[in-house]
Image (tube, rainbow over all chains, first blue to last red; front, top):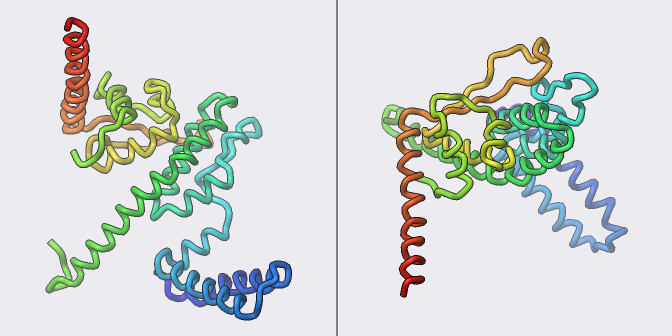
Length: 158
Length: 107
C-alpha cells in the first residue's frame, strides 16, 4: 500500500462524500443530526475503502481508461471495445486479474461477429461477480498466508 | 477435485478433451461448447487455478496484426487425466438413471 497517497485520496473521497450529503440535505429534508450521521458513514466508508482496497486502486477508479489493454483497431472495430461497466468491473478485481479479464473480453469481442458483441459483453458482465469472488478470495487467502508466514520465527514461511 | 462439477464445466472439459494437445482461444471454446465466452471465463479460471488447464497469451504485435492477442488454453497432462475421470463419473449416474427408467417401464 502506497502510504503517501492515503491523505490525498482520503481527502478527495471525503470531500466528494460530504459535499454530496450537504448538497442533497435540503432537497431530501434531512435534519442536522441526519447530515452528521451520514457524514460519519462517509468517513467510515472512506477509511474502510483505503484500508481494504488501498489508495492506488481507489485512484484508479477515478481514472477511467485502461491504457494499453483496449486498443482501438480502426473505426470499424469500435464496438469491440468493452464499455465503461466492463472497465469498472475490471478495476474492482485484484491485481492483474481485471486487466487479463478485460483483455480477453476485448480479444473475443473483436473477433466475434458485430451482431453478437453486445451479448458477449453482457455475458462477461453477468459472470463478473464470479470472477470477482474467486479472485478476491484467492488474493485475500494469499495475503493471509503471507502475513502468517511473516509472523513465523525468522520471518519466513514453509 | 476441489470444485463443483457443473454441466457448464463438463462442457468446457469435453471440448478441451476432444484434442487435449491443441490450444484453443475463448471464442473457439465458446463455439464448441455453446456457452457464451463470459460464462466460460470463470470456469477456465477455476480450472487453471486447480492446475487442470494452462493458458498463455499469444505473442503477437497487435498493431501489426490489426487484432488483439488471443489467450490460448490447453489441458495439462494431469488435467487431461482428471478431466477424463470427471467425464466418466458424470456419465455414470446417467446410465444408472436410464437403467432405472428401463426397469421401471418393464415392471
